Length: 388
Image 1 (tube, rainbow, N blue to C red):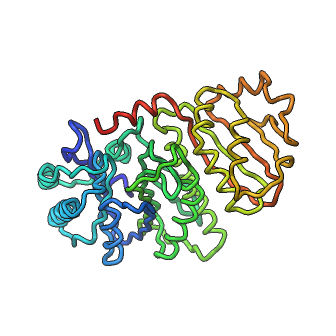
Image 2 (cartoon, rainbow, N blue to C red):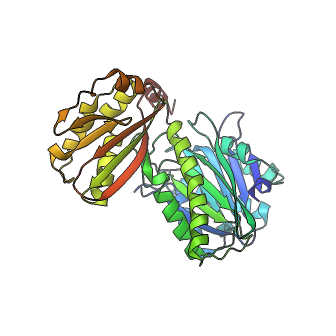
Image 3 (cartoon, one colour):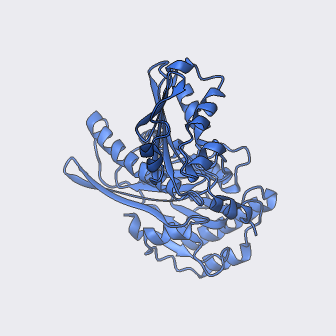
């Protein structure tokens, strides 16, 4: 399993910290990748799309501290150079390596330091998943990794996942890198289907600040061991649910670690006219700075939620049919506040770390939900000094 196939490196991007990870994939692995839709994709995003079309992937190489985004022809040349060095060291074709970067945009990689580090590394692949998750951190406060086991058809299956992310978090994707490994044998069609469904229910349902990164990538790897009959719908559902649970755990860690976050809020839109409208309402409220600062201030200011909802011209509903609940307490209905809208119980509940907001539109049958975090003084402090 993956615990024996990880190598940590000191690439010289960060001072006196691990900032590189190389992951060796078993021979029968099958990989699926989802990447950012940002129109300024980082160099690794561009290269990976090319490599996935050409070759069977044998290694994944990740660096933190530098995004290698908006770096032009030199950034591409640098990436090709360290891929070539890696391929020589690992005795594989250059296009059998996928690369991932995270960190500051617009700065060139310290290529000489990276080449030297790769050249000196013994590549024993005996590092831990925890050490790997720490090495890929940027503004993260803590490392994020999950190990889960489940049984199916008499076989014990293990899922291992690690990710990084705390700021620039927005669906499609979040600003994050995530790598999930499951020890089953599947084909590319199934791995893509599993990846999409699991990402849709996790990483594409979180938002910290509404900003989309240039480097987002999520990889799902089936390592080739344990043949399970996934044409059996029951088996497929069991596998999908367990992988999805790992995705959700990692996604929740990212929101909980939102730069300076003190709250995690689940926003649910129910009985919307269409699914698209339900999602639009979720995203809009999740990214409202007024709402997010109210969360930080532990202020049950339901008026900010109602006002944001009212600004959405494409979301169909009758205002008097809307019912708003905060932490299970009905605060607004029939167009006016309830007698609980400023209650002691409601105000006390805002001190909780987990906050729940539910808006019933009563205009259809479609539901959507997502997680967001508050906007704190710490968020401003972190991001006002990110490059300095």
